Amino acid sequence: MSLADTLVDHVAEHHDGMLFDLVFAIAWVTVVTLLFRGFGAPDLVYYGALASGVVAYYGFAMSLEFARESNGE
Image 1 (cartoon, helix red, strand yellow):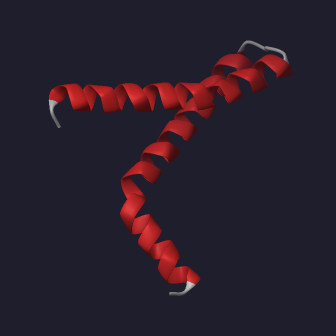
Image 2: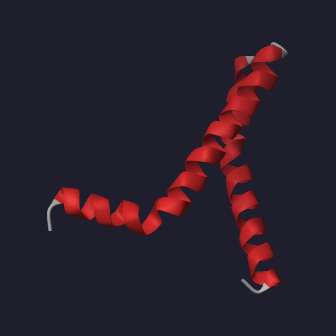
């Protein structure tokens, strides 16, 4: 199996999750940039808020998974 075939198979299998990841990342960076650059926050605070997106992503994804399990889906 070639690299291209492997890549196509991977994207076909995980396309929903990859789209969710991309949308969350774009939304997080947009909101943080608008808030922190708009208010003139120091760079360290801005980068810290960007990095906290990792924690926010996993928290949101886990709560979404928990809600789906509680609903019986």
